[in-house]
Length: 420
Image 1 (cartoon, one colour):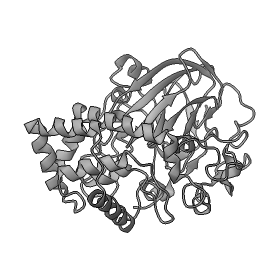
Image 2 (tube, rainbow, N blue to C red; image 1 turned 60 degrees about the vertical axis):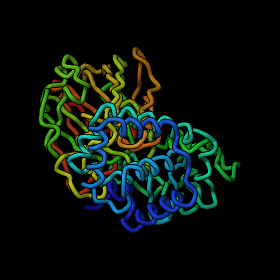
Image 3 (spheres, rainbow, N blue to C red; image 1 turned 90 degrees about the vertical axis):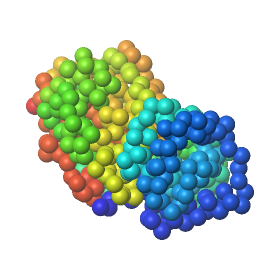
Image 4 (cartoon, rainbow, N blue to C red; image 1 turned 180 degrees about the horizontal axis):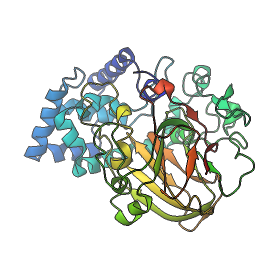
């Protein structure tokens, strides 16, 4: 299977092989002392007989020629947290930790390990150290206009479709990076970006993604610049979400909040996913008021159990992630009673995947008001609507296209549905 969700998140096997060779060469030629958080993580595994056995069994089951033992895995983690993702002309290793453990995640033992709360707590501590680097000026070494993310080759890939309000589903010629995003061209090396993360959460210029006119109370817009993944209606309170492409389960999506989940029982879920090159800020899908915000600390590397031998298992598990991944829930009471209560879910897919909220409970919102952003890692978003909202989407419902090539790009702030 090919398409944006796969081609942009993980490189070809040949490119991945080169990346591993480069990383392993560094480990052998100039080993870096293990960071204290990884020393703690390694000691946690080694001092616990059950965990030690599981990690070693996982390595054996994975049969990954690049990962000969647990020691190598921790050493590779250690190298990654001192670097930022690099751009290359042929491919992108945008999720290096995921690349290291991709085969491990798909083993029976690996699934048990990466669903473990204690293991995920150690992974988060590792990510916290990585964040220090990704938000520092030292991380700008991968941005340079000579051979990094701001080089001509990269910028040619960082264009975004121009919005045409007369043909919103048929984007016209792409906008150049400097025409679409806020940047400082007088800074000829870094375009004014202060870190890798500052570049990752770059802002769109005004009017690049305008709110449709007239913008009345009944307008429903997309919260993220993304690709449509799925629309499901008549969603159940609880369902078998762990079965690949099966169903959404509201109670699990909403962090076991049964009272809130019941408000959406029988309603509709709209889900999209973002590529690493997309715009990573979120915007309000409706005019209304924030009633509740919930941060959920979930897992980082959970995948469907049916996936056993795929180079990019997370991409095939997009439907699972709203139930188990680190995420934020923003409840919005729409001003239009026909829309009612809406829940925005920002989902951190893989890696650091921090979800930062910039609004507060009680804030009034217009369509397009910035809600927050995804930092560092991959991402997806869901909008949940109540059963009483008689919403007609711009696509057939239920919607699920198996081949990513068939999934349309949905621009942030564009109308996605109307009220019947």
